[in-house]
Length: 299
Image 1 (cartoon, rainbow, N blue to C red):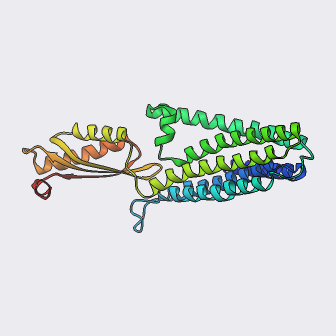
Image 2 (tube, rainbow, N blue to C red):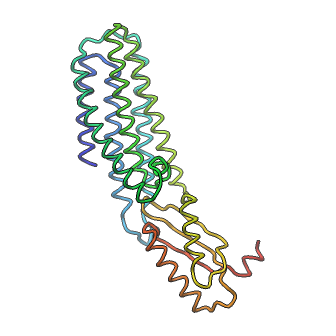
Image 3 (cartoon, one colour):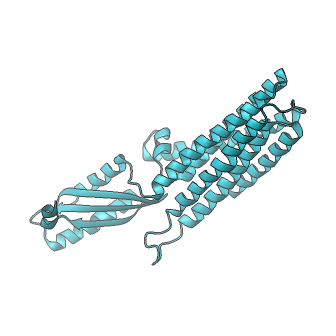
């Protein structure tokens, strides 16, 4: 991820030079886009490093949620530094001077498109591999995955390719007509694209940061696993919580059969916890408690 960030930084500098030399608002916006991606990747790296820290007395459930905090901050940076800057710069350039040098801009755009395309293909391969592991469609996987870094990389690579096409289109139309409004409009569209990506990533991370249950498919699988246990009549209440990209908590109130002994209940709870951890490696915490008459009375 650090190598990718350094590559993005070099691309941002190349786009900035091309934008300044060529007088292109779209290229300057693309430079801001790549710079925002660079900062985002650094923040995601920090998030992943912090999220795997082991639990301690102060944080008994670990530091997994820090991944969502840093990712949300990265989305906010993209929103302000990338999106708003590009839109503002584009409006200021709608009536600017004509493009002076197109060649350097086209060369930088072509090289950037190849590099971003390679990165996007690698991301698609990763998404397909992980979606096959979970047995879901890649799009559904991207919508549901708690590992928002995967979602961020996919959306950023996709937005990067779209942004490059917008910049190239704006440059080509400005060159053909001599009207800088096309270049400025491309800059505005790049900014809007960044705002959309930032909002999507911000919403995904904030919803996980404040506490979110797992997808219904996962919850149903956990319920089925619990109900298959010995001496269990029914699972009366089941709660799940995504603690981090690879950390899940499961809590359930279980109605045991009336003839189940205390020893049998303890053994069943231990077996169920082991089975859940084996089938779902992301389950880090399991809390099972018997459902008794006290709960029925209070309800």
